[in-house]
Amino acid sequence: MIIAVIGKTSSGKDTLAKILHEKYEYPFMVSYTTRPKRDYETNGKEHYFVTEDEAKELTCGYTNCLALTEIDNNHYFTLPSQVMDNDYIYIIDPSGVDYINKYYPDIQLFSVYVDCPEMIIKNRAILRGDDTEKVISRLNDERQQMDNFRDGKLWNYIIDNSKSKTDFEAQIPGLIDMLEKFKSQTKENSIEGVSYGR
Image 1: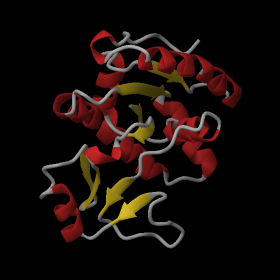
Image 2: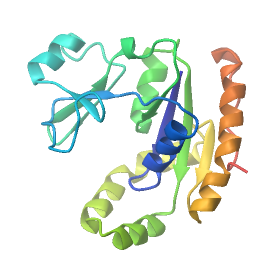
Image 3: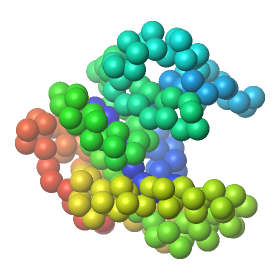
Image 4: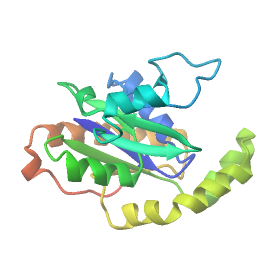
């Protein structure tokens, strides 16, 4: 099963994924990328770093991907073979969720949307010293698809990250409970989306 974590830039996706990994021992799904490895990165941890030719060979010319996206002329992708008999955390965008549901319907996918108002995202970015222009640009680029995903209730669970860290973390046991219920059901009988994790 894939635990898909979706949300706007700097909404708290990485924080949620880290908690699910460290506290609940869900492993990360590691994507491949054709971008150069940064000095602080380890191959196989953040990504598997491959050349463009290697990527095309692995994916049969990008036709055999579980998910595929392009950022700054670099490809990021995962392979269907990476989903074995385990549950993986995968930070992904709504188009990736749609792609998996359409082309890999046999793979169980549980979507968690991390919701945070854009004003709070911008304020937190300023406090962290992030490049606010880049954050605002990303928000502008992704706003429509993220809002459609959230407002259309295309998720299985939604986490509210508009308040404190304590409030954020208090919602996670409810998420884990819903995950366990989802896993015990077949894909055809999967549970409907629920409201905030309370």
